[in-house]
Image 1: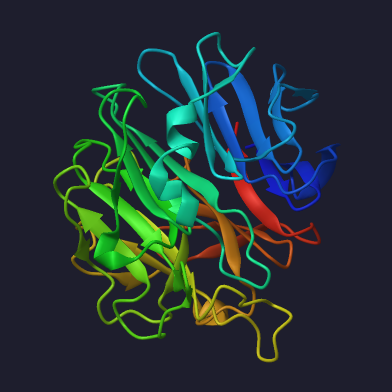
Image 2: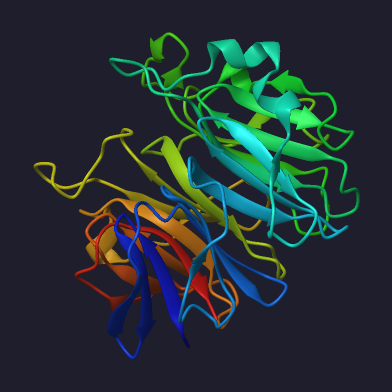
Length: 330
């Protein structure tokens, strides 16, 4: 198994516990394999590899931080960015044009990451309806979920539980009307009270019209990394930590956890072993393990890459890397 880890300082190829730096760049937020090519969303724009990650070329958007790249069923590619923007490519990623209706929507005037001074918001989550390529959802940190039913011509805003702090979003593999969103405590005017309901996982059963809070009784609540397995029983895996700033550098560590649901968020179980209950390191990159049904691969801020089985058995694939933000398996 060949694993590529996107880190805060570039991309590393991992085989047999050995890691080789194959691209130096900033903050590799996303690694995705589309139509035989690898795309990497980074703090220096979008990169593409035609040889399974051996070499990389800049493919545009170099003035943006690219958070996610997704393909629609009509072969149109979309990329979401910071500052919060959405871009479209109709030639396989050779050229990109901005979907200007997204960033120019009146709602965008309020979007920001509420630190001092405020930072530009990130369009960090992107979902495309597998059955209808004109149906798009974009999650904005901090802004909410923007939804379009006409390929970006018009947009409507929705806030799960009145929460605008969107992190990750995924649709159910068999039912695109069922959506999951992980959220934090950020608000447009500061930080919400750290109580149940103000951060965690939400589920929509109607394409994003309404949302239900499905993180009841779970701590820590600040949920960020998330993935859903395309194989039955479609396990939804979520990593969480006490706050946005939880880190392995904190006294006592990050206090992070990894949870799994096989019933669309109705109930959860820990995927942590004894050494990670809670984990001293915080988690970022998270994907289903293609070679192990129910398993996941997860990266940490301390530079580890772990393979976690459906039975909560942890195996270290790499260590000593920069903070691992994204993962892909070839």
